[in-house]
Structure formats: C-alpha cells, structure tokens
Image (tube, rainbow, N blue to C red; front, top):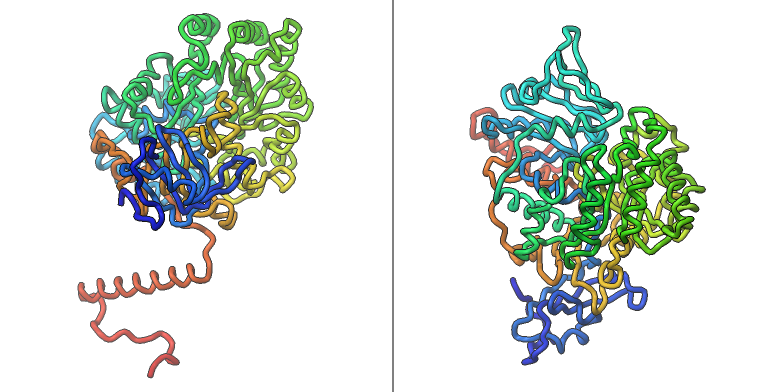
Length: 629
C-alpha cells in the first residue's frame, strides 16, 4: 500500500510535485500560527504545505506517495534532549531488554532462554531501562536465580545506577575474586568466606558497574553499524526523529563516534543526532578540551549529525553521582580551580556545554564559578549551555541560571528511581524533584529526555507520562499537580525545546512550511487517551527528513529495509527491544473483547486436553444452568 487512492487528490503533471503527502490526519503542528491541520506535503525533506486536502492537492504528481493517516493524531517528531544514543547503538543487539516487562518471572524466563542460545565466550547482559518497582514481585533477581537460569553463561544485570547482579560465570569472566579490592566509590559484596557474592554496589559511584560491563565482549566491524541502525529504528518506533547525545563514560572521541559518522556519510541515519564530547581521563580533561577545540567547532556537520558542544562532564571532580539509595556524595573541596579553567576555555572559544548536576549543592558551586567569569563578560555570551537532571535545584539557583543565560534538561530518572528518592529525602522533597514548573515559570528553556539506556528506558512516552502524571513506573505519585505540566507543554518539551537546545528551533520541532519533515502518526490520540494510556502510545508511521523510517499496522512495509540483526543469537533478534504491554485503561467494549478472548483461549485449552486424553470428550456444559434450554 505505497499509495492510498484518495478521492479529489488527482496526480498532476507538475515539475515541483511533492515526494510525500500525508492526509486525513489530526495534526498538532506545534505552530501557534496554525495549530491544527489535516494534511501536509513534503518535498526534498522539507515541509512545503500544511493545510487540508484542497491545499495539498495541487502538489500531488505522478510520483507522489500519498498516505492516508485514517484520522489518527500526527505530531512533530519527538526529540530526546538527553539520550546516550551513540553508546546505546554500539551495544543494542547485545543486550536483553527488560524495558516494559511486567514481571520478574517473565524477565528470568527471557534470560534463561537467551542463555541457552548465547555462544561460549559471550555474556547475557540486561543493561538499564527497567526498575524492580515495575515488576509485580517488586524486587531484583537474586544471584541464585541467575545461577539457576544460566549456570555456565556469564550474566550481568544492571539495576539503575545503584547495583549490578552477576552470576558465578560472570564473576569468573570479570576476574573478581576474594583478592579483588573494592574500587573507589564502589563495593563488592562478599560472603562469610570473603568470596564475592555476585552483588556490586555503587557507593555512590557507578564506575564499578560501568567498568565491569566494559569487560564483556563488544561488536566489531559491520555489526556495529547494523546494531546502531536497528537501535535507531527502535527509537523511530516511538516517534523519535532527533536526539541530543549526552556522551558519557567509556565513550571516546573520535573512536566511538566513527560508526554514526560512517552511517551519516552513507545517508543511513534515520534519527538526527547532535552530539557532545566528554573528557574520559581524570587529570587530562583540559588537554582533551583544548585538542577538540582545535579539531572542530559546535554546529560542524549537517542536519543529520552535528557537534553541539562539550559535556555532560567537563571535569570528573565536579560530577556528582545519583544513586539515591546512598547519601549525597561530598565533592572535593577544591574542584573549582580546574573546573573554572575548563569553562573559561570553552566560553572563550565559542563552545557551549552541558553539565551533569543532580544536587543543588553542586549547582550552587558551579554557578559561583560562572558568576566569577561573568565579570569578564563570558556569561551570558551567546553560547548555549545547560544543566542536566537538577532534581534538587533550588529556586535561588534557578534565578541565577536564568540571569546567566542558561537552560535546563530534565529526564524521567525518577520514573525508575523515585521510590528510592522518596525513602531517602521524604515525600516533600520528592514532590519538587525536579521543580519543572518553577523552571518553566522563569522562562527557562526546558528540554525533556530519558537519560536512556542505562537508567530509564528509551521509550519517550514513559517520560511524557511521567511529566503529565507525576507517577513512577511502580505507579507511585511523587509530584503533585502544582509540579506537573499539561500534555501540550510536555510535548513542546520533547519537540521545540529540544530544538532550541541545539539552535535549530527555526527548522525543527514544529510542522510548518520550511521546517524539516519530521513527524509521527500515533497509535493513540495523545491529547485524548486516558492518562495511564500515554505510556503505551507508539508511532505507526515515523517520517524523518521526508523518509518513512518506521511503519507498522496499515503502513507496514513502507519503511526502509534494514539488514538482518547480526549476530543471529542476538537477544534483539528473538525478543525485540521494548516489550509493549497492554494498555491499563479499557472501555466497556474493550473489556468485553478481552473477555471473549479469554473464553476462546479456555476452549482451545479444553480441546488441547481432550486431544491428549486428559479430559473426556463431551459437549461443553454452560456454567450457569439458566442458559440451558
């Protein structure tokens, strides 16, 4: 169904025909000048017309692909303002995703099945996107359960930035023994005999978790490209068309950026990426930043792949860790001297930056450095800079950020860590974590994102649900109505605000003529579905730069073909990525449909038992005698 015949849209012999027309949609444009429309036309990757059928009809030529949205909601493509997309792509096909899995029992069954197909020398790794709170059982897997599921295959299960569970085989593969010392900021749990038990704790540094994961085998050659392309397709599945890569630990420049660079040159990116550079070696940060400044400038690249600045760390000593099961870390008393050198170097050379900062105590110290540099005219100076996370940022700090020309990027980490935060800091502090409404009320640009893949899931609709509802994945209400946002504001945080953080708000994040043709046709109407159903929305048709990069349901087969998942034993080849679960809200008709399905399944089960001689073959008897004629 490459083109849907539509009455009134007759092809014309015209030179500037549209490449793609999408019509019969409920379009939320994000453009205050024309907030609603029914159809749009696209040519050369850019929107040319937004209106209704009569507006797009003159632009339909013999080669125009016309797609009927069937009355569904269309929105601008989503933009995750804090996603570890480059690192995630390099590892995607190696990871067993528990994102969206409702029970630990199901998760362990998936793990057991995957261990059986994983070849010798490889690991089974569950890395982020889930929380014990999402499981019916409300707990982590035990070491004994991992040993039973995979007695010989190394298994590494990462739980947020808090802990990891390893089976015996993984302890051996990682080289842990009674003689292995605890690393700084981490703890290896040990039994009475002094041997590691299989539990690793961030106390509070997550480096023990990352460094252990880094010992697992990695992909090579073309498999890295294939993995990245499938990860981008998985993001397209949820309507994502752009992301700002926040770099991160163990992501070296330029080596780990080579795969997305090669894909960009080949025109094979299906997601626009603006990336950051993150110094990896403590004590070498200033040298790295100075070297990069000589190599590149922010906005180098094109609309598909471009440099956006430095961060989310500038110096390691200035970074706080966000394991909310542990006390707030005390940073070194003198980190400001080196931090000031880094910030000055960037600002004097026209580089923007982003800063990981969980706690207001860190943010206040950073702001003092910026205010010192403001005396030299470096703030505000037109360079884009922002704080990430900021769960406990104070009202006074927000005022100072606004005065210095900064911005914010918030993520739904507390969807997954909210219960731990509330236990440590109390419900009052949790109600303001982070203070989203206070940020917006000050006129700050506030982008929204996920911080996937090692804490939150990459599914942006889970984050949108969190923004609107204030609920965790365990359904605990943390933020009251006064610190939530309405659906339109939440969507703008995932579209226009993200574009502003990369300086692209004139061409991205809104559906109007002259803007990039980035859009998503949704499985449910975001503005109308019951609030619990927001987290269960997916895209049925995602378009990036005028290309159909994801297609499902009636549109299946319209998207670009990808190479098969490689290696063949990959968890993604067998389970896919995010495990979609049934929407919690159902109408009476929907409930009746589910009841009918249950009755049919019951009859199938009865026939199965008859075929095996476990039940006498007899006419089915109604349970209620009132129905007997």
